[in-house]
Length: 264
Image (cartoon, rainbow, N blue to C red; front, side, top):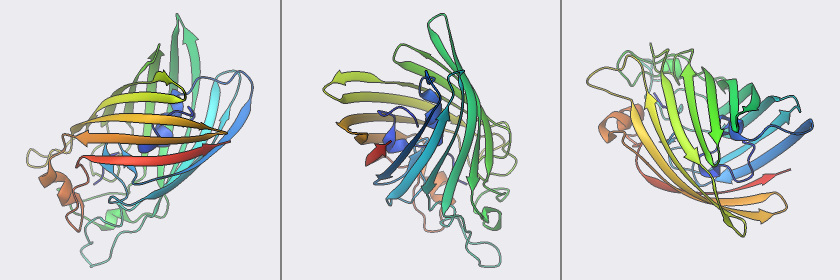
């Protein structure tokens, strides 16, 4: 089991559609696009590509009334790297496709954002791999989220209405994160982040809940191009997260991620 934009200076190194909801509401209806590459894809601090590069991209529609829709995709490897099934077959699912929509509004100088996010792992057979206690289920995941932004800081809560990323009997899992964006001038911004993932009904022997922290430095290169570098760490225990990989790869280990994104 594996636990797991429209600000130009977003968290590119840990980019996912989940971060798209931190952008301000559009003043006029608009459609924007983005494409990028990262040295590896990390989500909520956990490796999604087994330390290898990922190609990513998405599209967003924002209405002046505060409603928005979007989609975002990335190459992944964590499903294929799941343990072999009982019949010796390897799980499939090379692409993460996120579909999301929500509503943004402001009140008393606080910007609010509520919405729904579907993580669709196209054609995945993760249920055929069973590395964890209780086995796995289909990796597709549904989450509702609510966020509040005041000044540079955003607090966000996500709640899973389905099993979480293929972990059986994990409905009701949640993720709480706090991040901020500080403008350093001359196109640079600094984004500190801390989060806590709770996974329902994990065993006392294997606890998949953890904390993650990240510090991302972004550089606006102009003409829609942004570069970033991020230091990422988690409290996930190697013994637990190595068990999610058929090759024993520790998906929770600390790392440094670099990336570049073009928005248009």
